[in-house]
Amino acid sequence: MKKFLAAILAVSIVFGAGTAVFDSAEHRSMKVYASSEYTEGTYGDLTYRNYGDYIEISGCDESAKSVEIPAEIDGVSVTSIGCYTFGSCEALTDIFVDENNTYYTSVDGVLFNKDKTAVCAYPRGKKDSEYTIPDSVISIGENAFCSCSSLTSVIIPDSVTSIGDYAFYNCSSLTSIIIPDSV
Image 1: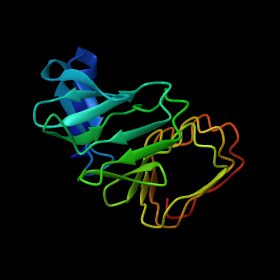
Image 2: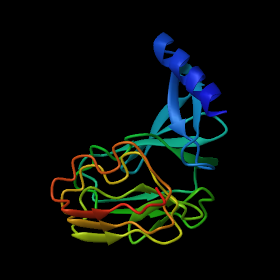
Image 3: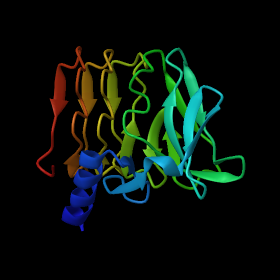
Image 4: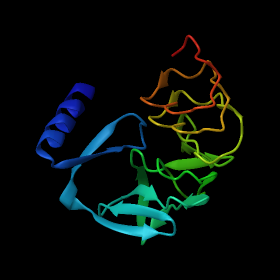
């Protein structure tokens, strides 16, 4: 299945016909959609893509300090958060999720999938120097901690079995991280 999805993604990138997004049901799986099949909009400090039957959060205002992921926008469920969505939000210290959102949740301002088995995004502007990933987590998403310059230590539990690409990229102050044998 992964090879099939990778092939579809590669063809769509070569021909410029698609956008890859995380499927929230399984953090690492991908879906490909033709780029003309959505409309864009804003919701507070967030930007989004409306695909008709679901909404993908695609970005946020660079100066936002706190954002809330709603359960739905204009009656359409928010089910997806695109790659690099919070990458330019250097001031972001907290991500909150509407309790009615069936796909995502947050704990202490950190974004997780609903069942808390995947860390999706740690806010770049969060000032904590240490972070302990909850024991329920089995995967750390792509770019999850990217450019979190205040972090000096991250504790990864034995429950984690995979770490996404660039998960700790540009964490300039990170001096201690122990990757368990389970990864």
